[in-house]
Image 1 (cartoon, rainbow, N blue to C red):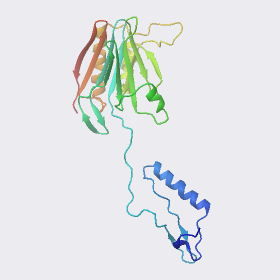
Image 2: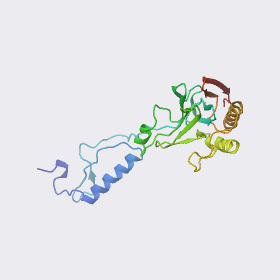
Image 3: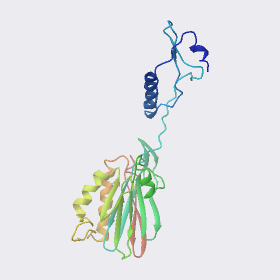
Image 4: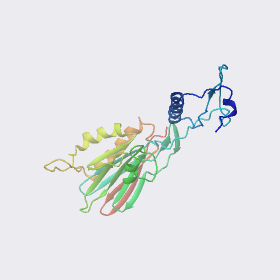
Length: 252
């Protein structure tokens, strides 16, 4: 097979090491956000001192790939389990960066009259196996599954972005977690359900006091977290069904 016309007349092809370095350089730039492009096969013209790309090399300005399959839409969700109730609440603001996409986005998914999921962060239909399958490039989604168990007692399951979960007495997820979780720890002081011998890990607060605590926690977080705002949607699960309440937060 004859060499290309621009590599004739005493031309020398690049060494294997030079070709490998060029290939690695383009792979690194592609992962940094640049688009993949053909690797120009260059040849050194004897005595010319000029490198020429082959005829198939692309010309023109470089196009950068700025699209990302992940986004953190912010928001905060809280769940508290009691002896005969479960409270699950979430802010309704959905953001992307510093832009507010909507002020009225419910973060709840209802499974039944006794089981709900609240999701903060990346908003999509996902949980459990979906999170685990994406564990090497996880979604930025933090989920709470809450409701009543088969004995009619409050139950809260907290999920991390790679699908691991744990049953707890209360939990907070999302952009306002660092502000709300210490308040819940201080007021509820629930023991871990994994302790042996077993201790009561559910909230001992009456339902009305627990609802007020959750509302106060969201009001406090809304003053300091730009992704928690507009409204709080509260769903209160009891043996009689689900009751819905709303609380208005700051709009800025």
